Amino acid sequence: MGHDCAPGSFQASQALQALITSLGDERRVFEHWEWRRPEDLAEHVLTATDGRAGVCAAPVEPGAEVAWVRWAALQDGMPLRVLLELLATRIDGLRRAHVRALWCVDMKGGWLNHALRERGFRRVDEIVTFEHRDGFVCPAVPAGCALMDVDGAHLDALAVLDVRAFAPQWHYPAFVLRAARVDLGWFRIAWVDGAPAGYLCASLQDEHAHVVRLAVDPAHGRRGIGGALLGEALVELAARGMRRITLNTAASLPAGGLYRKLGFRPLRDGADVLNLTL
Ligand SMILES: CC(C)(COP(=O)(O)OP(=O)(O)OC[C@H]1O[C@@H](n2cnc3c(N)ncnc32)[C@H](O)[C@@H]1OP(=O)(O)O)[C@@H](O)C(=O)NCCC(=O)NCCS
Image (cartoon, rainbow, N blue to C red; front, side):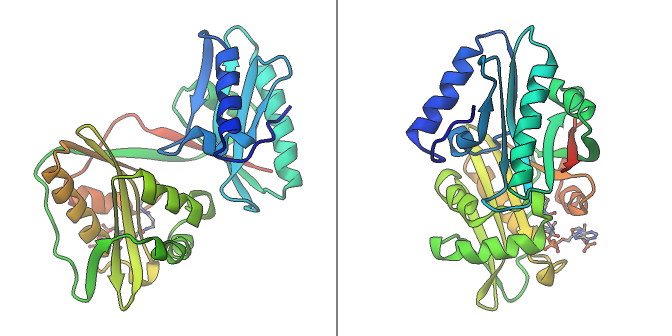
């Protein structure tokens, strides 16, 4: 049984909440909403008919060929088989929607990580979290580049830039960027020759800022734009009282070199990036 509700709707939110409540306190829950609201994806939640398990696997955007496992829950004491059968049903639906690959990020040793590998998912990468606590440096903004606040009119262009910067599974479509503009406390664009060349957005909570996104158009790469966006964020967010700044990156990407140069240090416990070809 799937919930037939519009994403982000009150009904979708209620349906997800009802499922979580029905699972009781003794449950195993996997969540990967990032900074987004669970109800935005709740229409993709599939629940076991007896209400003992649920899974949410949603395409990156409608019509996308890649999807993510965002949420899974299993009542304590229930065999993993119940969840895997549910996932198999969801995978059939994704295949019918022409989705070609399903992705998941889970901590090493996580219960879902284990279950997905049994189901045939492969570990293809690792997510490393970097942390910065003090000694912020601010590289100069390169000549011809200006940093400015995002404007709603820029978001479609940023979504196009994002396609060039990231592999499809990491893509932020325009609707996600719109949510980021509303929900996140920091969203800046690097502007070159009358067009966006890169952007950075960060969530702010208490004294902790998390850079949820840094992207530079490859056509403008390695000219200091990424460093300028990040350096500005470090200095300005520290000035706003952020004592700890973190960000994540896939170990396979070269971004770690930039982060180390700006004084970030990797934290020890990474997470696995899992992939299943459908
Ligand atoms: C990572 C990224 C933001 C860097 O932006 P940028 O404008 O090229 O960064 P800068 O010019 O300020 O700094 C470049 C440094 O980043 C690292 N780097 C960036 N691209 C690299 C590449 N292709 N190969 C090796 N190192 C690279 C190096 O440390 C480099 O320093 P160097 O040029 O002196 O060797 C950009 O390459 C990008 O958007 N990549 C794709 C998306 C991504 O990985 N985002 C961040 C992780 S989620």
